[in-house]
Image 1 (cartoon, rainbow, N blue to C red):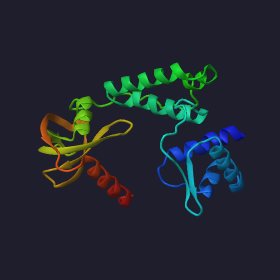
Image 2: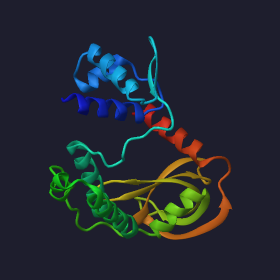
Image 3: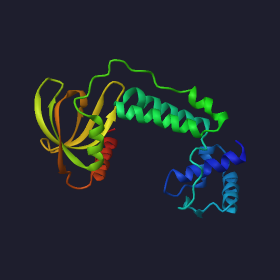
Length: 228
């Protein structure tokens, strides 16, 4: 890897986390020596990149500095293309349209020599046919999640049993052929996952979710990690 590429990647590594990153961790990711990392960090500091380091703790990129956002590597372009194409194939119409808009915006500002990697990427999602229909407006559901408001719905489980639920919608999960709603269910007094194609009816309520939705999402993610 050229030195200029290493310097760029070091900034990227520090930018992606707010925690200190050790020279050992940087060297391992870049497949280089720790001594090279020390030299590169010194070079970056000499170029007035605001990197703060402490022996035995690691390095942190301070606020107020950034690189042009579209200085992408070929792997990063593949990641953008794969993610956007997957969303365009699997998400609801509004989110699929947004994914195509993202690709168009990226294409408009990429250097010409990098454009073929976006137009004809090395990684792409496989199209999915016969996706089941959602039982509610997913675009409005996303807006309700962001607003932290409740949702009332009629739901039919895998056995065909129908129930009425009032839930606190937290996030939408995407699988290849189904979309899921992760929510706190007032009926069960616990987290529950609902398939959107099994929602029979829905009413978007003006009632605010008690507490912070972000904290509930963090609690659910922690539970999932512990179960895994």
